[in-house]
Image: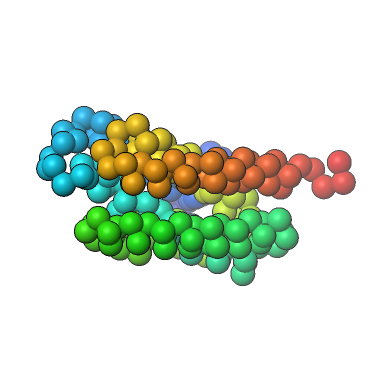
Length: 193
């Protein structure tokens, strides 16, 4: 494993970059799968797109909460700490709203991270000098995936209330992505230059 890590390092890849690539690939496959699935399974107001969206959103929100809390503890940058606090707070509000909607619709959601997000969190916990950049890059990657997921729900969801939830959250998610991109640019800027 040490030789593998050394080769990745020499090739310019970090473990976190590989995790991000895996997550992006799985998200892309999931979105393609959702687009090919018969979305009108039952006439209960919800289709599989709605149900899958709600379940995946709860896991994504939980990841953002935990990653944000980690950033407030580990970051060396005040802007990263502030962003982490914003993510924990706003995604906490989002998951609470989602929970109320899921309860109303009879959809069981879990408030735990999936294995990929747990692996990413473990890598962030282990990161030291690169934590700020690794965390912000993960936020950029995750928000791109989540925005695509919310746009898919907005376009393909059957239930009006679930689609409205997605539509309400999209501007916030886009703002998070924009802010993360700005922070990453500032972190990559040369000191004193």
